[in-house]
Image 1 (cartoon, protein in one colour):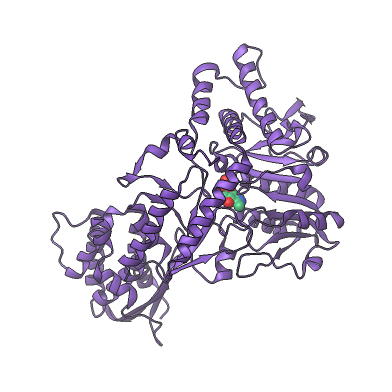
Image 2: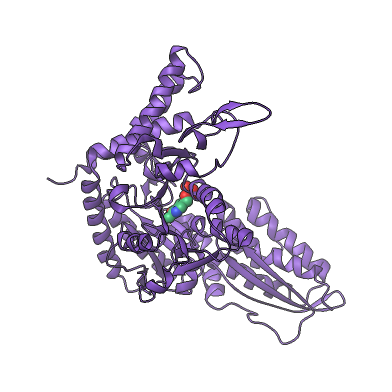
Length: 406
Length: 143
Ligand SMILES: Cc1ncc(COP(=O)(O)O)c(C=O)c1O
């Protein structure tokens, strides 16, 4: 059976809108994804029908709100196959998740000379927090290099993962190149030297089935807005024994069991990491989005997105002026490209006039741009609501750009 | 596609391909570097000032067609002018890229190619980068 994309498009109200006077063709899904009606309705329902703070009061609405919030945690636990719901911490997003790990686990357990290993294709959010730690306590940040296809070069991996390595923190799918990284192999090696494994699943959670127990990661982070949920909400998964043994990231209300001026006892996990009033509707609505894509099925989503990726890649290869940046064998539905010396910002401006939304710039991966010696790329990234017809319009748009600059 | 054609007209594309006064001069009195972190565009402006005359102006940089051609056209306009005149041209340019040319009597014809930029608010910063950097270079006290 073919993928029911026409039906799915009806679930996303924005897809009927026009942009720059043309039907919207949204190909910026790696930056953020559009929202299904069920997620929007969930937010409206919360504010219209049972709005209250959570974990605080005995009245009915507060209880319903708390139940819904905790149900979302359970949905996420099942989605990534965590062992317990306590292992799911709500954050503001992937960025906050990595900062939390660096500032709690990192500061408590790492010392001068210890090594943290990342890759050359990390998003800045998985580089800068470790650099701060390097400044503060003298850890050493190392990275696994990549080749010109955008695949990791593993020749020196047994030097890079050594007895000094304490954290291996890697991106699952590169946001600027689309490469799917061989995380299982890297994490197996990391575990042999006793390092903990952190997975940045920002660009994989919406495409690939993730089972944290099978992958064997100790921490995992992602952002809700990239998996059809709201902005401002994200998830940190951490193994319970780790979460229990690291200090809180922020302190204040909700994250305590008892407070006196002499001493405070923290709440158990995950509340220990959820200080202050939370992004309640964000969590509940993220639960709704995840349930929605779980019902469609990630295998089907991935297979369909791959069709789009292959179709677009082949069409683009027919255009001599196009150079695709990121040609790994194993890719998710992301295509970064250059059009000879036409600057990506000029490409983006012209495509916008066709109603096509693409990202132009460095995609928060300056080391990747440096590797390829380019100032920026244009990036098209596909979701399961995109169509072959849209890709045809996009391909024509590219030809129009080339024509304009002839 | 009218707006697009107005933005990317011949003159812009020509200056993008063959930027005028491009390259680092051997000697210069003033220098400044400009950067647009949003798009990664970068420009360097070199001035040779003789009292208040801009004897020479050159630029180098990496960027989109709008920022490159704007810097190139700027150098052709400002070369040989007094600083006072240059500042007036800069004001006129700013007026054009912010508000367009409707109801405006454009004194420097060469600036008319920028009349369409105002329809692309995200691109105004590209057009002004070189000019803004020129203004910074005037403040350079290297000599
Ligand atoms: C691979 C990767 N990691 C981390 C992030 C950061 O996500 P957020 O900005 O939602 O915190 C992104 C978002 O662009 C990403 O693509």
